Structure formats: C-alpha cells, structure tokens
Image (cartoon, rainbow, N blue to C red; front, side, top):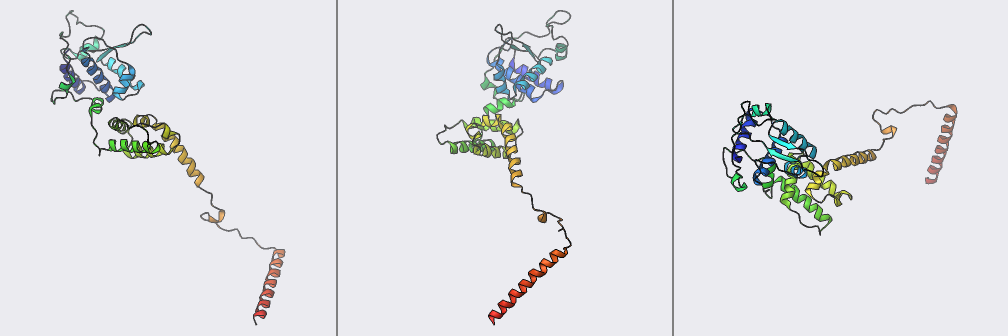
Length: 294
C-alpha cells in the first residue's frame, strides 16, 4: 500500500463524500501513521486503547465511538480480541484504486460480481517520518494531535506562560520539587484551551485556587493533573465560593431595610404620667444646677 496515495485518497474522500469529525480524523491518522511506521500498512496490527487515548486526546469512550464509526465508514477493520487468547486488531483498508461506495456496499467481500479484484495489489511502502515533514501541496495536513507532539512553544506564548506560572506556584509550595518538561506542560495547557474549551484566564485562576488549597496543592503537581481534575476542582471551588458568600451576607435590622416605616403606637395614660414625672425631675435638676452656678 502506498502511504501517500492513501493519504490523498482519504483527503478527497473527506472533501467529497463523507463527513469526518475531529475525533474520527485524529484516530484514523494515528492508526495510518502507526501502520506506516511499523511496516504494517497491508496487515493487521495491535495497538492499546490507552495509547490511542493518549495520542488522540480523546476519552476512552470517545475513542471507541470514533473507532466504531470508522469501521462503519469502511475506513478500517477492527477485530475484537478474545480474553487470554487473542488481542484486538486493526487493519487499514486501501482507499485508492477502488470505489468507496462499492466497498461500503460489499464490505464483507473483496471481489466484484465477476470475481476480479476491486483493488490493485501494491507493495507496502513505509515512508520515513522525516519525509512526511517536507511541504507538499498534495499531502494531507498532519492531524492536530501530531502537530501538538511536534510543536515548540515560545516563552511568550499563552500556553508556556501558564505552564511556567503553574511551575512557579508548585515550586513556591515545595522548593525541592524537580523541574518538569515545560514544553509538555504547555501542550497540556493547549489541550485545556483547545479541546476542553477553557479560557486562559480561567486556567490561570484555577492554578491560583488549587495551589492555595491545602488538599489540592499536594495533588496538582503537573499540567496534565490540572487538566484531569479541573472539573472536580471547579465544582468544589464554586461550592466554597457560594458558602462563603452566604456566610458574609448578614441580615440587616428592620430599621435598615429599604422602605422601612416605624410603627407608631398611641401612648396610654400610664405612659403619659411616667413621662410627665420624668420631665418634672429633669426640670428640677436643671433649676438646681442653675442656682449652683449663680
């Protein structure tokens, strides 16, 4: 199988005949590149679920869903393994020199009604990855997951800024903590921003929050951990904020409430007599004071 012909045919197929999601595209490209690297473009091969999850940035359930859809589209073959007997296998289906629509209709057959082959046999032609990096308008652009693994983040990029900021906070809590791979951390920040749709401002605030919390500051020691626990921490932070806000809010007395009108009560005869007696005493006290000054 010719790797470049396969890529070009896949690109035309996406453009003209089928709809491919980002997750499906990432998974297919990872499988295709792995088969090319290992010289298994024309044979079945095994690849762990955990490896595909890491390479594609998908959750395990998302990866399995994308895999089933690729099978239904006739792009790959997938054989379920048997416990303790056989591992699950993948196989890349050749796209060029054959009709995709016909292959979908006859996915269980490898020949046409006349019995002749529907594809032209070719010799496997693995291509070194260094050659895949040469600009070529006829080559498919590398998938997002491949770009992220090759990407270098500048010191002033928002991804690197947040990665360094997290490292400084961690180092502030534990000066002896070893220095991480900041390029890898920056890529995890990118995933939070691009794949998880987290604004950089919120990522920055979450770094502050988790490194001040006595529990999370001992658990969030990398950008990948920050990404994995982001939702859990966000829910906890929101609960604490709501609780503190409620505690800080004190009920105002009645007289301070908006629209308060004091209640006027008519004084009884007894109350008026007491007030008259008090006024009499005050006047008497005032007269004595005045006499003393004279």
